[in-house]
Image (cartoon, rainbow, N blue to C red; front, side, top):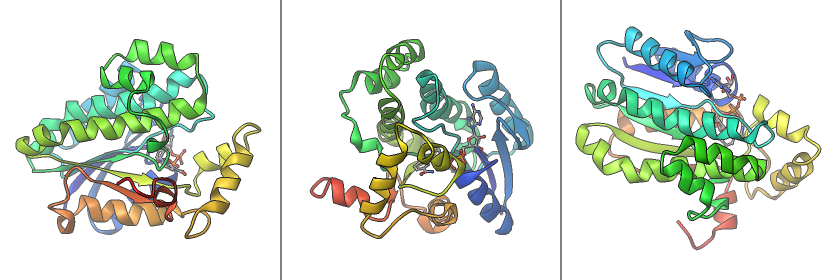
Length: 254
Ligand code: NAD
């Protein structure tokens, strides 16, 4: 049985994945701002350090997998918090845990979004994220909007993953991402209740080809597969679990 660490395990998709991994007999180390084995605010340098040190202390023999799942919605404020939690905390903790993962030929599964392709790869916020310039990314995004912060943070996450696939694979770590569509979690409830974003999200849910929204377990099912032995040759992939919405929006792109 494996040893997995994840962030954002208190609710939603992370909680569903945690449940499934535990049910399958794995050990799970959960990091979250609210409840978990390690309580840490991943928007801060101190919180990220606590998370990494806590995981290292609990998994000295190495990790079979790490899932930086914690994330904030487009309605979170300030927008820089979205950049900090969704992008910078994820890539920083992955880099800090790389040796633990390599020692077991482990795997990282990022949690992107079907909204990641909705923003251009040349977007200045995406570029600032990829340059590793947290101060510039945070300052720039404050002048913009929640959608750009959210979709941009997820786009940057996928691009960071793709850029690092070769180096990490050669070091013995498989990188992949899952890109969920609208999923029924507390994050989505917050967006649906928002005066600015709620109606647009409800309209989008009605357009999803396979119909409506996902349950967190449906996303976790795919994540568990991607983390496991059966997906042992899956490397550098972005797996959309979105009821067909990405295919609807970007029909000829893949
Ligand atoms: P959620 O709100 O249920 O879960 C997010 C988790 O992150 C919570 O446990 C929360 O406590 C934790 N968290 C938030 N800020 C934190 C911080 N500063 N430090 C540590 N932990 C923090 O939401 P969810 O929908 O389950 O989202 C999980 C992931 O899936 C996120 O990365 C989200 O962007 C992504 N996602 C969700 C959807 C969706 O429709 N729900 C769609 C695409 C992608």
